[in-house]
Length: 267
Ligand code: ATP
Ligand code: MG
Image 1 (cartoon, rainbow, N blue to C red):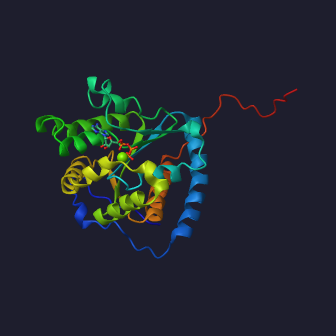
Image 2 (cartoon, rainbow, N blue to C red; image 1 turned 60 degrees about the horizontal axis):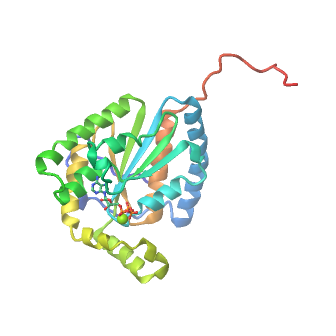
Image 3 (cartoon, rainbow, N blue to C red; image 1 turned 180 degrees about the vertical axis):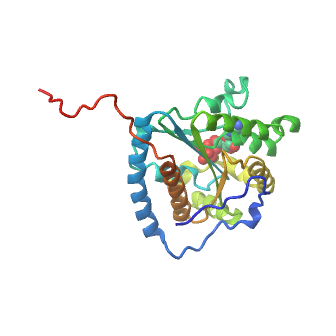
């Protein structure tokens, strides 16, 4: 099965050296989506057990440049699951109210409750990405955040939340093509955000910020996975496999009931 790139904790991340487009012989678009469909069936069962067990949770964090496909991959891996046990949350620019608190306040409130799978579409990492690129706070503030994030994630892990972090890795050229396709298609105009074109001008600065974030927060308790994302089906299959394997490893169990109800006849 296709796998994301991972780095040893402490290793320096250099995204320029990691392929964003992978040739994969064993799968093509059609077989990839068939596999994802199968995965979703198993995932739904495991998520059901996790919910019944009601002790632990799983958090998938998605980060990427615009048009890398965070939304579509969420749609793909949640197809067919029970919405009761999935919590998807998209973090936008913080509101006035959110800015009245520390940067992790709004994040902590959206962490999946016990028994649930949570997906963050953007996350606390924005506070060391866009915030760093545009100097939204001084360096002495954002530079402390890497270790704060590591501690925060360790605390979540110790509290029963397994964290899987994915960076959807697209090339600058692939982003250009996808943004251009949106401009050219009136039915895609609702997705156009001219601010994306502005952010694109900071590609190099974002690259640096991502390399730093991945290098400094790639911990044993919350490792980063770099998902080649120039091919959509490949990206979706990698994320699907990652999520499924994590749930399998957690091996959730239906709770044992205190009594054996078999033999009781309902009249
Ligand atoms: P997305 O771009 O995630 O698909 P969207 O296009 O629906 O979502 P946007 O208005 O682009 O919505 O919202 C996301 C924007 O908010 C991004 O530019 C992101 O960098 C920014 N953002 C998220 N968190 C923060 C933060 N903590 N501080 C500043 N900006 C943030
Ligand atoms: Mg956007």
